[in-house]
Amino acid sequence: MTSTQTVDASAVTRALKNATTTASHAPSIHNTQPWRWRAHGDQLDLLLDESRTLAVADPDRRLAILSCGAALHHALISLAADGLHATVARLPEPTRPGHLATIRVDARMPVDPAAIRHLQTVGLRHTDRRTVSGTAVDADSLRSIAAAAESQQTQLHVLRPLQVLGLASATDHAQHVEADDPAWQAELDDWTGGTRPLGTGIPGTVIPREASPTMVPGRDFGRAGGMAIADTHDRAAVFAILYGPGDGVLDWLRAGEALSAGWLKATELGVCVVPMSSAIEVTVTRESVRHLLAGLGHPYLVLRFGVLDSDTAGPPRTPRLPTVQIVEQP
Ligand SMILES: Cc1cc2nc3c(=O)[nH]c(=O)nc-3n(C[C@H](O)[C@H](O)[C@H](O)COP(=O)(O)O)c2cc1C
Image (cartoon, protein in one colour):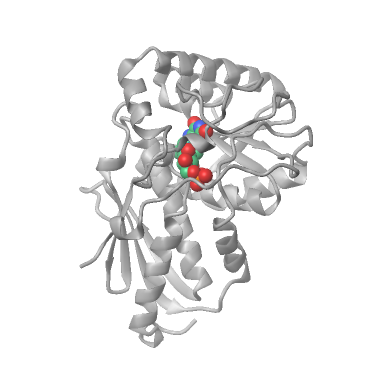
């Protein structure tokens, strides 16, 4: 590694810009993209943008911060692929919890081939809500995905068949609670369906046309989308829970970094991932999911893994906000 002085300032500026562009591809709850970046010198601050959070479904900002963690991981991949070493201070200002991280570029380093591969995968990763095929997800792939998540200090627990029944019941209950709450539905309507010309939210084109027979119900968007799905049962789907010892802002941020690391690894292995957060959003069902972990820790997000039928085309990409809208310049 060489010292900071040898990193050309304009190269750093360019790399930080690349990092924010790469981060914009990160997954987020309802595609809210609840992050904002502030670039200054060799530093990039990651801030929670309250204007793109879900007051009803996510009052603690758990899922928004998790989404920001995924964006942070994407940004770090970009810097590593540009051959730059960066240090990260998570929650650098204890009195300002919305300041989630500061990334500081401090040296040049050899370009990491794994980072180049992950950077390419960022462009391929997306949420595909189609029914999974009958092909099983192999145990080695699951172990590699879990190891990728665990490299970010968050664990992944793969559910056994009986536990999947418990998850199915919790998710079903959560979706009923949400469907019965007009404020919840109004917020869901604000963020999902339609054409989404502003670059936020989930367009109808990636929402299933109808519910397919599944063990654990997929997100009830409250309206039909335009995406055709197979009407076969998703028997080969595997369900897992991202979890950890605490239930605070730092844990959620790290969980988002783990989500990104695990999802990119899964994409590289041909495994499809769908996050399922309904049961986490409702307090009582989050507690039921915690019981499935039998004292191991607090649940952050449920994930569905599966293999998709490669003969049919996947859904279109979900749009993103233009980068200028998420980066504050000094
Ligand atoms: C914290 C979190 C929770 C999510 N929850 C769900 C969910 O319950 N159901 C679902 O279909 N997608 C869920 N998603 C996927 C997002 O809708 C998706 O990432 C976003 O629309 C952007 O699309 P993309 O992943 O294709 O880039 C979630 C994503 C995150 C990061």
